[in-house]
Length: 205
Image (cartoon, rainbow, N blue to C red; front, top):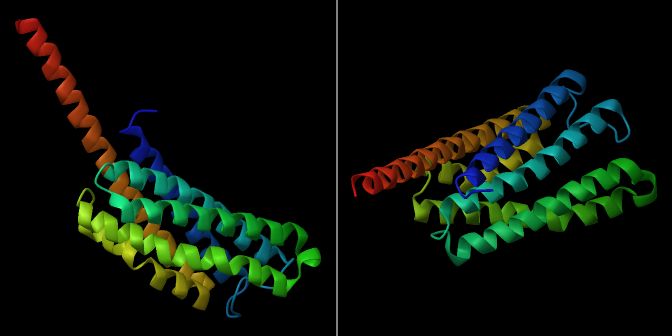
């Protein structure tokens, strides 16, 4: 997989994450609203919403890979730490979310909350760190880096309103996907131009 392909795969991951977050919001508004949260665990609404959350969390890891590839080698120590810890946090969140859905009766609500908390805190802190690194590297539009920095606010909104918050978080990741997709094609165009120029120089010689 070439380097310019990684941001494009990251863009696809961000688009899938955005779609999953937004769909979870639509499900909440359709099946649970005006009540808060995803509904009672084990219900159709909770199963759909939490499954979509797990899908979004996995897709975000692919987006992180694209973000890191887009900024190498200028991502720096801060960005790389944010990438690895954000990836670990998201993987934990996805695995625990699916584990709770499959075996909630065995885990229990108290244990489930305790298991989710480390992944939640890791994701909440280190995604903005990646945003700061992206802001400093200036490879993506500043608005994209700013969205990553503000990600915790969107996530808190999700916890306050699973419906509107899910849709807002989905729009954030759609925007990140658009930025990554645009950058991947710019890199592809530059690579093609360099290759064609090299061919032309060989022909001239």
